[in-house]
Image (cartoon, rainbow, N blue to C red; front, side, top):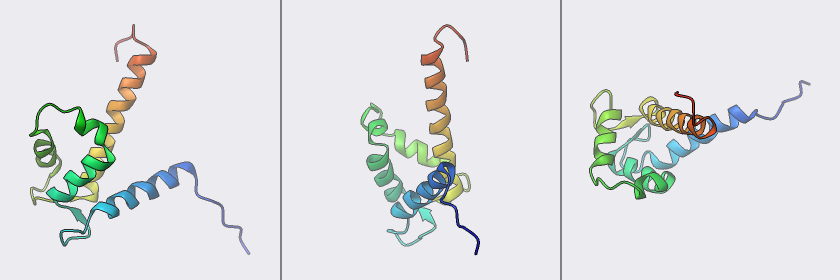
Length: 105
């Protein structure tokens, strides 16, 4: 019998992203997408530090519209991952700038 190895850190991160998406999707009827209400709930709960620091009340609406590549008023998992990827890149860039303030990135 083959030994089943435990998931890697990366596999656990992917599972976590899927679980978070599924936690917020489906409350408005479509379990494979985030509606605007579900997106706002996700942002205000999971990324609360970002949303609380925003001075512009329309920023989340504009984010949703920009992320909604097929313009269906919903965010599918790929569109959700575009958000997560963009945030990850911004955080990575910020860490690099903090670690190497004299270098231009």
